[in-house]
Image 1: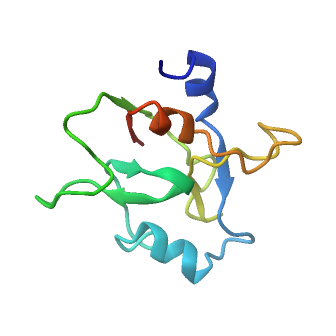
Image 2: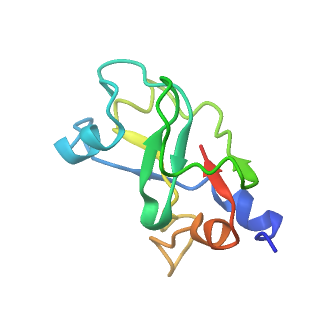
Length: 121
């Protein structure tokens, strides 16, 4: 069976990728699309261990299986003040220490994936 609804709600955990308004090169490369210098909007499919691939462009992704059910997490506005790009802040499936005290880094999408679901943000 798929994970319970509280687990889905925990997917709201946001983890900053950098500090002081600077993005590490690995954070920039992870999401591509020119982010944070330019808008990067769309759907990302997530896999185990917080791997991701952007959907779209007519290319098939290895992290989406059309034969499986899908859960899509819409995180809403994460810009706060001057925007999330200033802090190099992107949505991830890893739970932050603020949301998961004593369990920071927990991979929240992995139970969904293990249950046979596609996970998109």
